[in-house]
Length: 154
Image: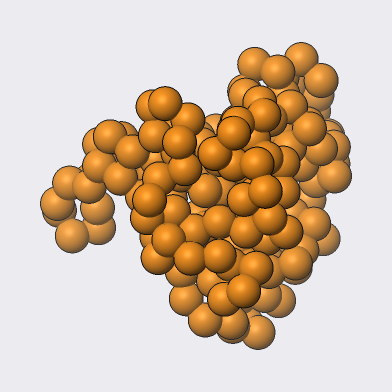
């Protein structure tokens, strides 16, 4: 889920999810802009259970369409040449919506490893294990890309 304006209703729902120990992984958006300057929701909700995901290509470069933000986008993940279907029975092969499931899967794997892990523990494991990536330095909170194996070893 990514892109759009602020919604108090959605903010409250994500906040309730946080209180229930549920993570919310959000696509940073595909406008190629800095979300520190122009917010894109739900990725910009400043809640402890939100992880905002930028898209990178197979070489680790920030995708030209991917939104970024040194304080508002947390991590990068593959989002170019990832084939998927859409709600409109078509195929799409790029987007932060293609990157976000990688992080969602990592969160699910980590949450299954130590049962009862808190939102803070899961978030820390995912973000602190990011591999430093030149294209993401100064463009994301971690300055790195997802490393599922490293996260699972925490």
